[in-house]
Image (cartoon, rainbow, N blue to C red; front, side, top):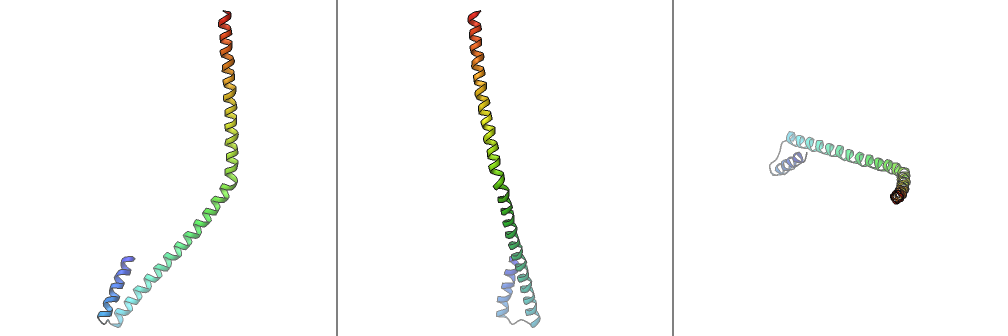
Length: 107
């Protein structure tokens, strides 16, 4: 499309140098109108894309707002439970080691 636009500009510049027939001028005007229509279509598509992107952003914000805090809470609870299990495991191992030591002394 850019190439077409550039070609039309060249043709328009040339037409200023050499008088063109009415038919040639009508063709140039027709091609120029087609380019303007294509530009309008592209502009409309860009605006639709921006609107759609805004909708997606809003939907993502709505998903994240209630979800992230609850996920963070669940992971905090899970990590706390793991820490408690590790602590109990360490205490159990310490008791087992102490029992092993007591058994070794008594034997």
